[in-house]
Structure formats: structure tokens, C-alpha cells
Length: 429
Image 1 (cartoon, rainbow, N blue to C red):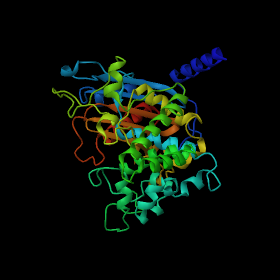
Image 2 (cartoon, rainbow, N blue to C red):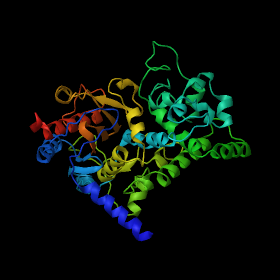
Image 3 (cartoon, helix red, strand yellow):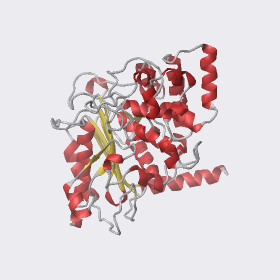
């Protein structure tokens, strides 16, 4: 049996390394029967043009139907003062909020089974999140929290106040403050507005959704320890449970398995693994920054909103499993996550980026993507036409910075990758 598993793993690794041009449908997009010719040299050349000498280091991997079409890396993971280490597709780097896709898709994976109120995915999405809260949270939260559904979290319509600066201390303070119904505000219940609190909450709920006995155990611990609703212990307990779930039941089940870290600063040096630092400017001469959820968060625990380190190759493997297998979500779930006719109703995807050529030539109105920005670290997972997906990582702000770019450098990064894809398919038109 062990030998069979080894053979299967090797076969999948071979498939992930092979270029392909077969037709695929994904994510609610209908491309008809058109199969695109792809020029890898043109794609690679455009990537190099956009990033060489304009970021400290970069990694870009393009996949189709779960197989690598192109992978390219350049520049430096660390600058001269930090050791002058080259960036490769095997260098772990901070992907910021792109890691929200991990926890969000893990929750959607759980939603593919029958819910507690009957039915599958739609029943789960309509279910109210407070039903999965520990009792002490239910008893002390603001009543406005009761209206929030899982779909509201995944569509960023919860009304949680944006940003960690507005609500400090324990995450429970979001629940105590409640959500706004004031439509003169930037954030109110029912309005789509991207906020870290939504996916942080997803991570805390995931262990309780995945294990029906987990909540009872947590309630007993809270009673035994006489904890208050805002006690950091609850948040830490949930954060550690999220980390255990995502590593044991998720990262290890992907083919090939991946091993992202939310504690790069402490974990990688013990394994002699060089990881990317992040820099504010591409030619920074001062030491770079790193990040650890465990060391840098009040809870001292990992969370679902970001801060995970992963290599470009691993992120591509994750995207390949997401796009072309049922290991993460089913084809029906992928389709539900994005409908180009109703892009604001997308589940989990952070933004959608349009491109004139893709729209005009392929009727591809917009590409949904999961962008991440954490200081000088930026990353993206982006869906492209004809079964293609791309992942990108840079460890500095892109120079010259697009001052009109409201979404930060992950938006700029995504736009450049789409432009490179456009170059790769230009011969079709």
C-alpha cells in the first residue's frame, strides 16, 4: 500500500510539471469551446519586463488544468544587508491576505456536507454565525450580530468595522460593538466592503463547524476557567485549533502536500530554510521585515486573515488543487464562488480586475483574484480565461508605485500578471 501511495504521488507531481492546452471550465465562467494557443516565451518576457529591477524579488507561476505552464522567479529574497539570497519559486514569502483563501476555501469545503439545519451549501451559507459561538459570546454580544450569516462573512457584507485600528484588544470587541445599519457609513450590514474581521471570524468558526463536539468542549473550558467573553484565552484557543485544522486536514491533503508557516521567524531558522524578508522599496538598503502571527498578535496564535509564508511553487500547487480537483472544493462550489454577471456577489475572492483585450476578444469581463498586502509583501491568486490560473509573490513595493491604485500593490501585481497573460495569448488574435 505504501508503494502504491508513492507511485500515485509521483504521478501527480509529474502532471503538475507538464504544460497542457486542454479545455477547462472553472469558476462560473463559460468560455465555450475555444482553446487558446499560448506563447510561454512571450509570457515570461513580459513578467521579466514588469518585475526585473522593479521589485526586490518575485515569483510567478502560471497553471492550466492543474498543471504548470510557466514558472519564473528573479531578484532577491533578502537584500545585501540581510544576506543577499536569491529569490526562487521555492523561497517561502509572506503572502499577506492572499492566505485568506486558505481558511475561506476550507470552510467552503466543510459546507459541501449536510448542514445542521438540513441541506448542503446553500443551507450553510444562510445559517447565522452566532449559532456556532461559545455561550459566553452569545450572552454578551450586541444583538445586531444575530443577523450575520456565513454568506455575509464570505461576501464581506457583515458590517464589521473596517480595520484593526477601529477595534482593539480581543476579537470579541467586534461582537460587543455590533454592526452598523447606518447607510451613510462606509461599513454597514449588507454592503460589500472588504474587512479583515470577516475572514478572521471564518478562521475562528472553522473548528466549530468541522467538529460538532468542539463547541461543547470549549464551553466547558470557559466555565471551568470562569472566563469572560473578551478573555484572550478564547481567541488563542480558537486560533490554535484553526492552525491545527488547516495543517492536518488541509495542507497535508493537497497533492503534493504543502507546508505554509504562520511563524516563519521562529520556524524556518530551525530548519535552515531561507525565507524572504519584505522591503518598502525595491532597492532598500536597510534590513527587511518579517512577521509571525504567534509572536506579533495579542493572541499569540495563527489566524486566517493573513501572515502565512509559502513558496510560489506551493501556492501554485494549492491553486492547482483548487482549480482542477475536488481536493479543496468541488466544481459546483467553484462556480458558486464567482459569477461574472454578478461580480459583487463573489464568495471569498477579494476583488475582480477587468482587462480590455480579454473582454473584447474572449468575452472575459473580469478576473477574480485574492490579493494580499502586508507592508512590503504582496501576493495574488488570479483566475484567467480558458482554465488558466496564476499566482504571484513580490517582497517589496513595485516601482514605480501606481499612485492611483486604491487596492495597493497586490492590485498592481495582479494587473501585471494579466498583462503578461495577454502577451502570451496575443498570437491568437
